[in-house]
Length: 242
Image (cartoon, one colour):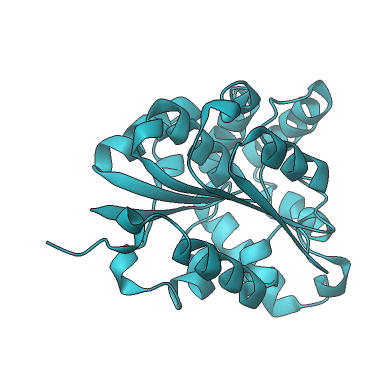
């Protein structure tokens, strides 16, 4: 029995997947995991996900969720039927980004999370959507709902993430790698690198899109996911509830 697990980005939840959940066929038994909110390291998040969801898995991770998904696939490659990575990176933290995160963590600890997140909206979305107040507010609402403690913990987990590039060439499952053409947080070069390292990867670039693919271009993302899912091995598509 195969299950589709959706892995949200940093301080995100099921809301970022709501457009996908609305169209995914019921037989995938889609589930949005929250392991990133309950464990302190990428490795322990992956172990928890595997323990909570036995059997074969299709993983679909966005941003930080993609990092966790790659670690899950590393820990149990034989259980992974398919791997979809949206706006993610296999690289370890750079010193420059580490310094930026440390500064943000200090502001989160001082109760200034809203200030930091509002300033980051132009980085999260394509320029054409920065004036979409409803979209920006939806994003702010679920990230702020996570709270300062989660923002700090999850940023620290990202800072200590492993270099996934070392094990990607060993993964033999079909993979879909998707990136917005204007992603400023995980630039296209990161997705190209992942696609080049994975033996069975397909790279798709979404036009006029930033980092929040599932929210910015839900129709295009849905079409890509549904087409890819339909092409996975029979053991994935034939998951029936016992």
